Image (tube, rainbow, N blue to C red; front, side):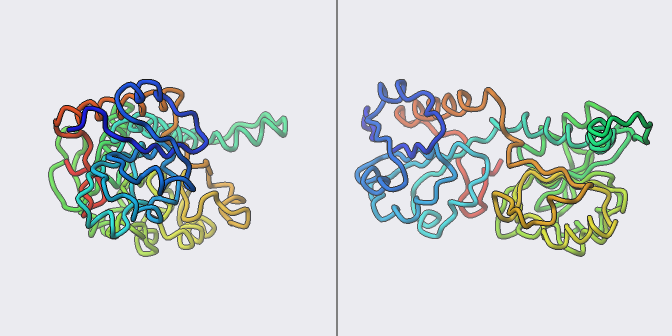
Length: 321
């Protein structure tokens, strides 16, 4: 392995943490979308600090020397274009960094609905002192769709406050230490009616797109709450809006959407039983340094010829445990 690999860094607008350390370890080419083809030519590594950028596929013909691409994000669905999948380029992601913030976001959303904080906010602005009904989280049941590191961290946090947590994955199996049981995703509609909360935390793949279908929504309890921190396309958004408007579902906390930013024309904005957040469930004040440290650690492994952490199975679209 060349002791000084060439790294193309697609920087974007957020602060590029750890650049000085990288420059001591490699030849670093910092670029934007427009300059990516030139930066990629002869590069060994592509570091997608701006993981929302769209130019990787357009620049791919210039990646003739690329060995490794790192995405400081959990989901890699935007990158699963055929040329990358078919190539020998190793793809890694930021598995582990977002787990706890996303689990806390899910728990906060549950408290929002169980304790009726939305109504409290409305009454405060209207200067109304009026008691209202609240519920308990302890003893409630939750189904977490997605049994990777985010889903498991979420399950552990929810169990710690007294919820009964099951999971849902590609196949039915024992839940181990984190879940009571794990259902197969093919059984979603058959089992979902038993749960008070449903959390979507799965990666977006061809198999999970539209996972929350109109049939699944129809099988949910009318008192149930949906929380989506995975990807917007995991749910049939039109069917979800219909269920929320018609009272077939008590509420939804939505952090991700089919189109982002969520268009101003979307009916989801106006629904009182919906909590909209702008794709920030994984954010925390410690996120950027943690992402930079994770890449630096993997770069040290790369230079030493050791196995990389968090290698994505490009056929599946996620890190396979």
